[in-house]
Length: 386
Image (cartoon, rainbow, N blue to C red; front, side, top):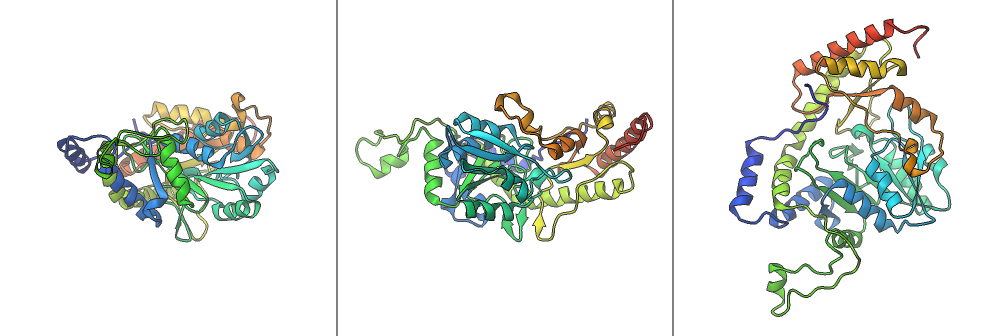
């Protein structure tokens, strides 16, 4: 099966894990600190601006808590978003307010976000769909003018930039994922950054029981007596990365540039091979100054054939999917919004395989299967296609 997502792991990652094992300490330690520092360096921010956590979902929950959003507050997010973002809002008692997105990019425009704001809006959570930054700079300016916190869900955009600025540091808080479907993988784990270093310190405490200080060897060195005593600032949980994950992440981070270059070549190969396919749209070109991580490659077609095309591809050994389901349709969130552009996009969009281990032959197989499936399914339609 040609997979949509697939990590690239090799002997270098295995050797890094072996070094951790040889040191006889697999918990959070030096390598996690090194990974945080290396990630901060890639973002172009100080070491005090980042903290690792157990997952990107946990980072979203912490970010929502940092905003102070609660009962009576609203948080705006595009309906085409990861479910963890919606859960992070609702779990704190705030109301998720979903906004529409562009039919082609599946990112919201600044006007879409503005239309969803109210006097109760506490924050905006913005996903960069497929690694495409979208109008993040304009949305960040809007949020600053309104005194609203902007959280960037940068899980898809580990290498995405706007005019040289990394996605994730354009707003007030940014979060990333290192799970097995992402570009930089560490088995699992996440990262959080904030414009205010004090928020980062607080995030670190929220990720580790709310402890004001960590007990252990480091405290024993600083305090000659009763280094095991502690105080807590919140009733929090434990959600941290460890040195096994961080050792893998450090190697992966060093390979990121090559990963993204390969993904960009695959996307370009798809663009060229599908340019003349009637009834199928490929992702629109990036605006000037925008750089993508090429996390997803999506095509759009008549909604009457999309599901059948996906089935045909699966039968040919090509796995496809749609990310991410429209959250305003999830009953648990209690939304009655009508968001026609997002609903149209969700019905027409299919994500093709895209990862750095994908061979040219795999791309060609996917293209051939897609062209044949679209032709077959389109021929069976009655009336004109949309």
